[in-house]
Amino acid sequence: MKKVKPIYYFYPLLMAFLIFLSDFLNTRMFETMLQTFAVWFILSVLIFSLGYIIDKSFGWVIGGKVVFVSIIISIIFSLSFASFFKNYIALSSPLLEDLILFILRNITLGAMGFFGMAIAEVTANEAVIKAQGDIEKNTALLIENAKKEAELLIKEAEQKIEEMKKEKTGELNELVRNEIELKKKLNELISSEKEILKKYDR
Image (cartoon, rainbow, N blue to C red; front, side, top):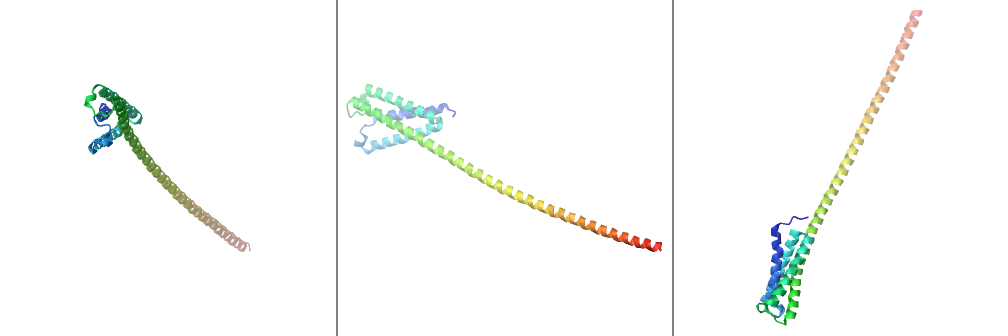
């Protein structure tokens, strides 16, 4: 769970304030000057950015609740302000219709906050998936290198065993040859002694 710092609560308050600030714009933004639409666009971008920051600060679950509460608070303030101070906001229709428009406008701007949170989650998940992919690639390379090293060690061991077999076989052959040579010499010695004894007997 993320550690929430007190300064993080400034972001949802700022979001609620910006949503409430939209009440002072004309509800018929597409029928008025381009400047009005530009202000709407800037507000949407700011709330989107705040949603992104809130997700990074609070996380998806708590951040979503915080954004939802910010929207509800802004709607309550908007309805209260529009009811009691209707002379200070741009009303272009009967009060009830404008109140409905204020609610829809606040919800629309609040949805930009949720959209910013969703983008933050997507980018974070992509980074995690990429990191996992890199780890899997590194693990596969390590396993492959370990297999190659194991194969080399096995080959070296087999070669050493073959060399030792050859050496031992050579040593055994040498011993057998020496034994045969020794027996041959002994037989010759015995034969020569027998001949010498025969000469003395005569």
